[in-house]
Length: 490
Image 1 (cartoon, one colour):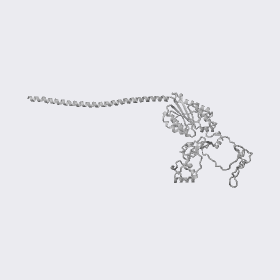
Image 2 (cartoon, rainbow, N blue to C red):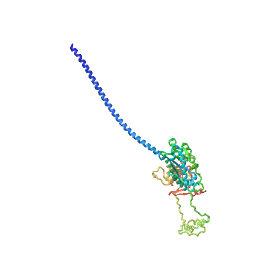
Image 3 (cartoon, one colour):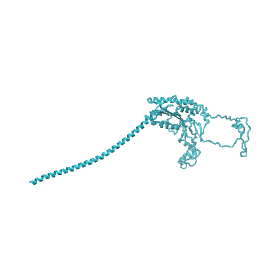
Image 4 (tube, one colour):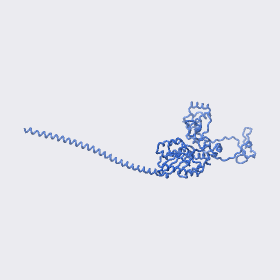
């Protein structure tokens, strides 16, 4: 009985002991899990600390960068607020001052500058009433062909000599230090290019508060202004100067327009020349050629001998004529002269022909023969297109690498056909070209009134005066045509 009772407590102790051991295992597992999670949290904590340090460093960097940019922006604002100015760009070949200003020469140039400056100041005050626009500088660039305009003004009787326009321009520029009278020479594209590029340079400048642009007579400037018409920030800073009535394209742009009627003409210069010639050649008194003069002049010659050979001896001196104005005695002195009757080949100086505005003119070509046209078309059909340079000028820079046919020389009739075809190609330099051997065309042969082509390649030359006025030789010297001078005197 006692033994049975002694085994019961032992089992109870063993059970309780096993329970303790299970509890210890669970505690160990819990502690191990706790340690593992602590280690994981410690790793995450270190990562977060690194991230925080990086963010702090980045914030400092961006803060410093922001301060630098803020200082730069402040400096830019201060700079843009300093030395503000308005820019005036005028095409002087179309924006013509009033006649009385040109007529005064030097004094007229100073008066034109003063009046234009006063008008611009008033306009700026009205446009920017809340700004100190009266303190802004005003830069004026008038770009023109000085010689061409001077000749035109003289031909219209407004000035007596083209040099008066030079005095006008110098006085215009000296009256105000930022006023410029810029001569770019002949050629419409020269003035256009300079004005367009100046506009592109100054328009983005923050110091340039406003631009007065004066091309309303020339549709060639429309593509330059077209991109700005929908940008209100930029378009509000552009005002078109309207001298002659603006072309419809400029009106459609919607820009503000302004007129200065006291300064500029509102009509074009007259097309017809006045009686004042563009150039006055020195007066030369030539004798009247009468039958008596012809006989007296003929007596100065010795006819060749009947033997068929020229007499090598000096010609017999004629008896002095009582008529001092005979063709035989024109020149220095009144005594008898020895005249060499051997024929001499006249040398022709190569040249190009210009109109009064220094624009190149192509001499008219005769109509080609239909038979020659047919032969030419047959030739190019069988052999290929002819090289213009080789056949028209006698040489080709490409030589054997030329893409066109050289071959046998063209007949005179075929030569004329090719010359007509070459003239239909626009010369890259157009009317500014001075290359004597240029085979291309330089203007529309029909002119503005006679051309009915919908898409004429020379449409921008329709305004040109097609009357020859001068020759320009290869060495650069110029010579006025007597036919033009005589006509201008009438």
